[in-house]
Image 1: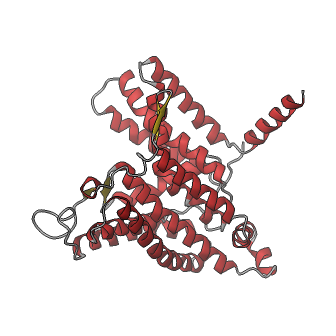
Image 2: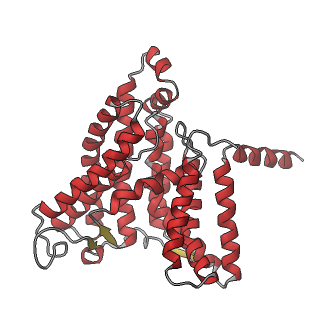
Image 3: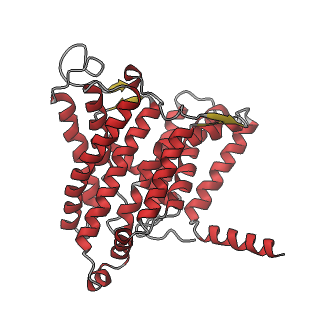
Length: 354
């Protein structure tokens, strides 16, 4: 009897953290999985791909938490951190690092650069209070095109990155040339019930989730949450509102920069130029689908939202393509699903409740 009551209370607590968008989009994903099984798709294969996508996007979605908690809203300037991470990636290749040394060098350089860039971005957010999401979007787009110039003009000389003719870096750089493709995915990788688990990558994501969870229980993290909840009360309590917002954006930018390194090593290729342009929209939609709002986000929202959003995008397209075998339908449906889910999630940005 006691166990039954505790179980019901546990489920009630979990349900209280779910938004309408989480329930609806999650139900659609489950329906797609069921339809996929009836069409001959392997359930283990579909879930395995979802888990892999969760690992790739986990840190990029996690980067939303500090900015939301600080009151600056979802970090639509995620391309800034992504570009910083890509710059660290190509620098590590340029300096001749390979294998695990490449990964360590890229992460270290990304963190150092992201702290500097995040500080400047945090100062910008303090200067445009009230218009953070709009300015963040413009800033993310501007940084992407600024780095397009850098990719073409910077004096990189590594033969694995440059064009055969002319100057500049290739639009896509293979990590196989530096023995770094899926280096974390393959660490302790195993298969269970037909589901492949990229253990190393998942451990990194979950460890970073733990660090962020612990950070928001520290004095600095509590101050950030207080500032985001009620800046006037926080200021009256003696908290430095601007400093807390800057710190939150530094943490967010660092997570973006490290997150893209995790993404790239799993994907096996580093995409440059306009690749970072629209990544913010998927990351923002993921955390909102998980139940977050523009004012509050939790680690629970990151994990659940990333799994549902990426799972639906990954599984829905091949399943519908098998049901309706029309040429180019998969690309059309990808755009409909991706943008439709993002639009639906963003309509819940001020609510998030049921």
